[in-house]
Image: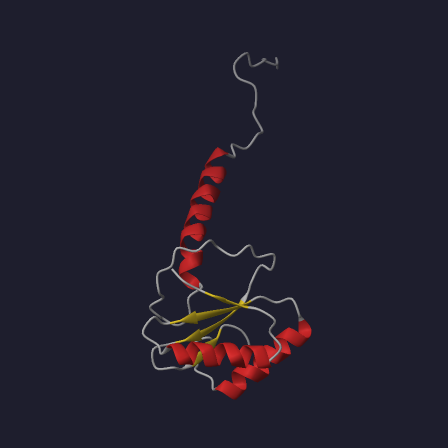
Length: 138
């Protein structure tokens, strides 16, 4: 038997990764669009304000929400859609601040809520040990 040499193309053992990069880029865009939509737990109508965003060194601040019915919601330490009373807010925030004293606290108040309810929440957070509290606006 005689051996014949192939004089055409050589065998290519490389994998084309361009389609995988395309799929990863599409997934990245999808996650970038859907991630902000998943962070809001309780639907409140925030007031409009022309303020600069807070420069946050902490990746995830604790957000305490007051809805139009003056119910309190905390986004950590339980279901963020379950209303909690003032004593529970104070206890949970005190525990969080004991573990991480530099944790940023933000208050989301519905624009239809009484101003007194937002102030009372800020007083509760101060009694729990918060040195500063930020307000969330749109």
